[in-house]
Length: 88
Image 1 (cartoon, rainbow, N blue to C red):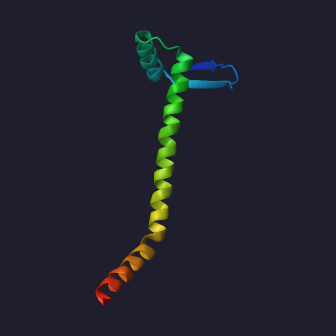
Image 2: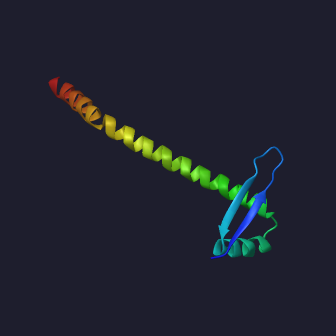
């Protein structure tokens, strides 16, 4: 499988060397030929988008874990409030 390597340079940014699968490279080049965005900008925007997705998934996992931790206590408190309503 052929891989392509790019060195990406940005002012005030880090240099990154990428190895991209040939199929991804070809697809990206086809897209870039139809839009007016430089390859470096396209890759930078793709990484930014992917980072946002990953952050959202990490937050979702954290919230799910924390929700499970308080689930029993929440149900106990709800039952206590229901018992108070019926006591009147």
